Length: 269
Image (cartoon, rainbow, N blue to C red; front, side, top):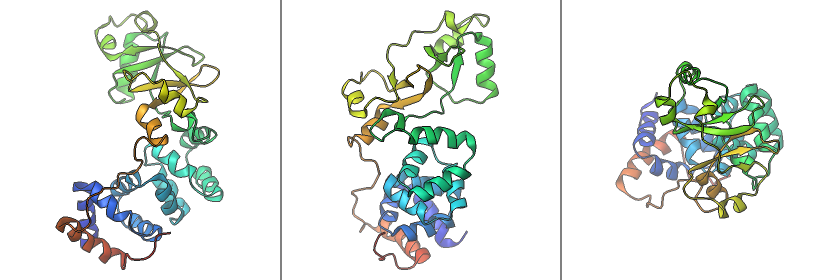
């Protein structure tokens, strides 16, 4: 790693909003060159901070195989938003090369219009089966190293959503009992075909997220209120800062940025 790359990496680590604001002013070609010079951690910071449209333009400038490797490292919703804005040719190329376990849910998400809930759901949500014992659940969570959740959604053997199980119940219930005997009924869920604005207008603010089903009632993921508000324009998609670029810290880091990239005054693509 060069001194300039180390400086930029520190900038992204310590002041991500300032860094993204500065990087976002570069041309798509220059950002692509910068991204390819950095490690995966910093690439994720950049693509997670840029607007999806800008990130898509940058991805178009990156070789397809490198694009695929980068997409596999990004959060699902970030990847979906970026791929949606790619040209048809590049989108097809990327999807063809992605692992099937990622390409399949991405294709499904892309089949929905951006104003539909289905294009903003996260499919990577662990679920439990109603016939499982509490001990089975605990083993499953431990063996798969699942992240902590306040609750888990419960499905029947047809993958139909039937309830949810709070973690507190999971940890305090006798291990031989079945999930269906202690789960709570689902009081609110939405379908992937529903309109984003319609859902937001009727959203109960007591819920941070809601389960999403298809028209058959099959559980396909969750959606957060923030994700829908972003699509509806109620939250800024990018984290571009309003901080003036003239402060000393930004200027210091920008020296390394422009040194690495050359002249950053190139008009944006």
